[in-house]
Image 1 (cartoon, helix red, strand yellow):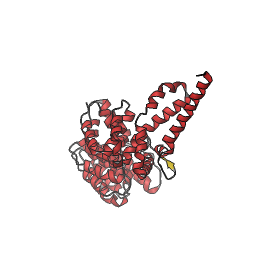
Image 2 (cartoon, one colour; image 1 turned 90 degrees about the vertical axis):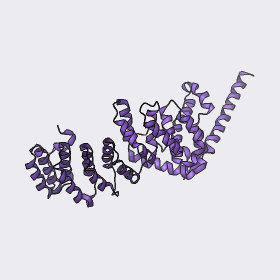
Image 3 (cartoon, one colour; image 1 turned 120 degrees about the vertical axis):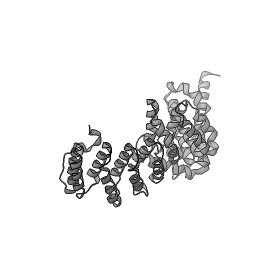
Image 4 (tube, one colour; image 1 turned 180 degrees about the horizontal axis):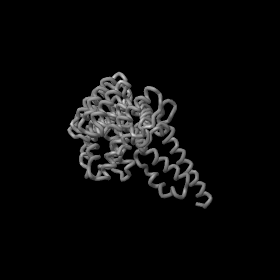
Length: 370
């Protein structure tokens, strides 16, 4: 074959290959509300970081879209989870060709998103379980972690496996399993005790990984689902689990039933740190109709045997107390001189809130106390 003819043949084959690829990956691609499945995948943040509420909105909209596509989305998503032969063949050429590099990069960027989307799809994605199981064995945690999460969301037997792994911090898959909780949705709430216990181990690496999962987890859990799970965890035998649950209640929004009554009960916890977390959460929650009973409960804690608990109660009065509470704080100052400075600052803060006169009271930030 002449050199010129050979070049034209290669060019023609390349064009045909691109055309076939376009038809295979785009023309047959499912769509919803005028947007292709690939465009909906862009709504999914595969990092698992960032604002919890912004990720909830974007991820949930993609979840609704793929659920609306139903079974028709599974072949498309499964195709992006699997590594096609052409990707392996073209990857070595990517460094020498911008166009090939762009194709490879897009395929690799869509893979974790497609894995997550299968989990959002739920039970209809069961035909993709073998592909997800293979992805879960990947050496790349950005692939393995969401794959483990999607497996658990589609088949609860895999959730039990995750729980077993997270119960053993020495397990080789523990770091990936901890990362997977970010993508589990409401199912992740069942794994909170294992994560909180891991956060209290002596291994600093495990501690950091567990805290990262706890801080960035539950991105797609509605507060209406989150609240009952946290309430249940305040009864856990481990104080650090009860404390974590009490602390996280302070981030809930809306007048959710049972939250304030639960925190009022936690104020009687035998562990002083747990009581302190409950006080701080009550200070953050804005539920005016519960305020009188909250202030009555805080007043009893002004005589708590623990200094941090008494100080937390004083700070809570500073942010939620009324002018009528100034007398109670003044009487407490007479009985407890060690808290006189904090009480003086709290009284100034209460007067400032109710009279509009600003006061400079840096001591009201508990983190800045000696």
